[in-house]
Length: 227
Image (cartoon, rainbow, N blue to C red):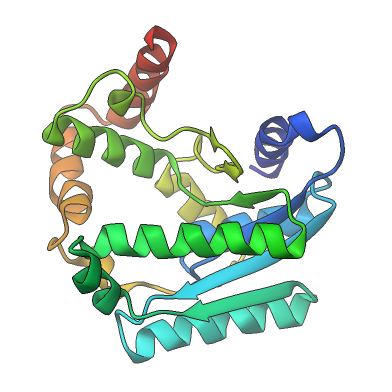
């Protein structure tokens, strides 16, 4: 997995012609903590920093996530940035969903950090499951070729070196390599549309085709090529 990650990260940042300075978006969950460990061991980046946004949505649990990521960085000498925001208040003020509010808040802050700290890219730990979930969400809302092509590996200064890895492989790697991470208690709730697809719909797809995720990945590649 390390080798494949290095290749993906190198490919996504190859336009620089030098080793990139990368800001890692780290929530504390298994995906981002695995990405952080892979990036730290990778020869590709020239500089690594970590950004953690505390969305204030889960009380003490959110604060615990922030403290966990901060300690991980301290132990490894990695530069750490954090920001605490009131996501619910922001969503109410702008008349948008919590998910959209969180997205707007974090990417606005990431762009600030890239500019202020002289960094090239922000690496986000979206994986293959996230990509498939996004495709189905877009289909449910109504979309075209772009929407069914999944999440783009590169979008401006945002790169996603974990996109080819399914969540199951990431979890196995974390277990084998004793990578510590935090559990988000809301992931098992199906209040949000994405969680409902993840927790209720995808298990049914797996019963029909155990390899459905790879089939969806191939389809998304075809859609992207068609676009």
